[in-house]
Length: 369
Image 1 (cartoon, rainbow, N blue to C red):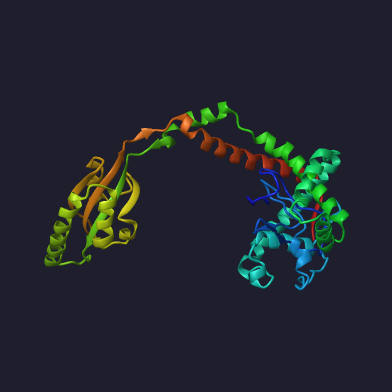
Image 2: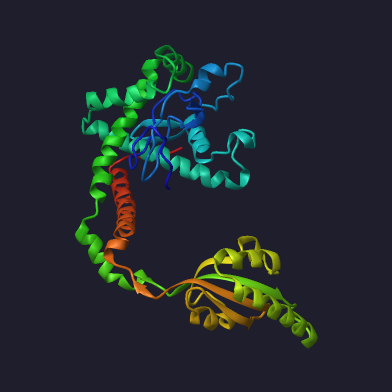
């Protein structure tokens, strides 16, 4: 489950499920440079990039006229090594997983509720497991890192007083919010050590992958194609086809006279009878094997800048223009290295995430209530 991280946090960091007052609002927004930046709930885990609560929101202070939704009951839904997780926390996590919660009347649609609830429970338990492991290892947030993070959050507010007012409104006190933030940073720290850093892919691994999958990195022959089409119905009579062919032959004279992409495109806009006319007949790059058999030979036999004759297809008569022609080519390792690295790192992170979670679960007592 890959979740976008709030702008103020680092990419690739872990579960951001924070401990907060179970009844506090789960999301809001801070206006920065005129743009509403979504703020996530204090309970924000995810397998690959958990995103902690970003900051209390201006809306918490400025939106005093808006009533907060009723708090869900504090019924326990699970215990992780004796630590209770509540229905209120679950509700917050479900809201985060379903971003259209508010416009659906403060609920998840019935058809999606079971799936989202299951995912939310998983995320809540996973965050608690990671947090408890961080405590067991006696991890500490480095003072300088803490000050930088807190300063960046406070900068989202017009004043220190506004920051404190928002924290009190949403979390009950500044201390409660900052405690939640510190918890999130501990989780980030452990996740970084156990997942992110252990998912680094070496250059040797990238090159080995390229060599063993070289056939996947062949760029097929391609033509940058424009078309003008004169359609006839599938059950067209010989007479109807003849009439369409005559029209196509008349257009062909103008198409052959077109000197470039623009001139051919204007003709396509004016005269073509298919949907591509609104794009100046431009199909962009088409690859061998993706064009219908009745057109493929004509398409790939043209040179750059060449216009075909009238070609019959299953749906009409077509005039083709090849703007550029690229031969089949083996892509080099240098060209593909970045995408290979991204793929391998993603796969390694997913594998390591599952392994680390299973390790924590194996030594934990998890009770689903």
